[in-house]
Length: 306
Picture 1 (cartoon, helix red, strand yellow):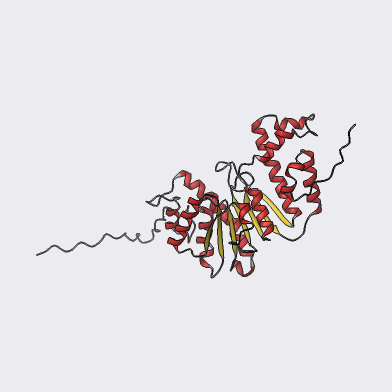
Picture 2 (cartoon, rainbow, N blue to C red):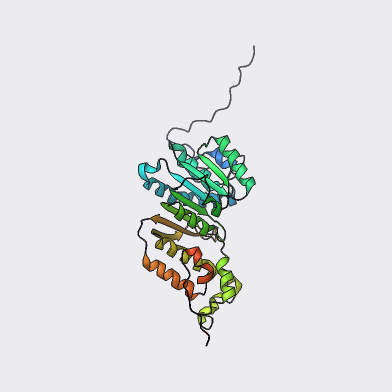
């Protein structure tokens, strides 16, 4: 007589009154998030585990997504038909996760990932095709080039730029203004342009004051330059009709590039912001070098010899 055939092992039901064990990723991955997507993005390992570096990255993206989701829901029809341009997309972690958690459930709406590295653009296109994310496009363009590209619509609802380096954040702002974006969500990265200007011009009006100590050492010059640049960006947005909020993205233990700038279009252009913007540029001696970047026409100064 043959022994009874063994059946596939099944998970045992929890004992009566004993709660079922939580999924090991329940505290790490948002409900509705595709685990397969996270594996494709190499945020999860093939075994579905999360290492420390990926945990920090995922926490940053999820925290940013909380702000983005709230703004998208403020759009007409709860974000139905929304358009979003993600600048400096890189491997498009942010774009894919936003699509998976929000856009995938809409009948219409589109995400545009903009990146200069062709190999990353191609990989993102292939991944979107495998996942069936049909309303995602990836463009091999710089942020500045995308402003004039016919591949994007005339109007974009939201512009995001996560850790866009140096002047790429400024290009993303220029793109948002040109495309009449309702919202801009920006996390600036390294910024060297202001530091170069401070070194070149030495902020002549301040060089004999104690304030010159702020950029005597190269490290301080970079940090002060980044801080001044972000202040100028906020003033520029306010002068262009946006309400601006500045906050931390995540704790400093996760990233030193942690400043989150959120701009909502109200149409109320603040004259005082434009005046302070020009005054700061003049005070630091960079109006001629950077004024055009912040939408200011250079003032004509008569130069008279003594």
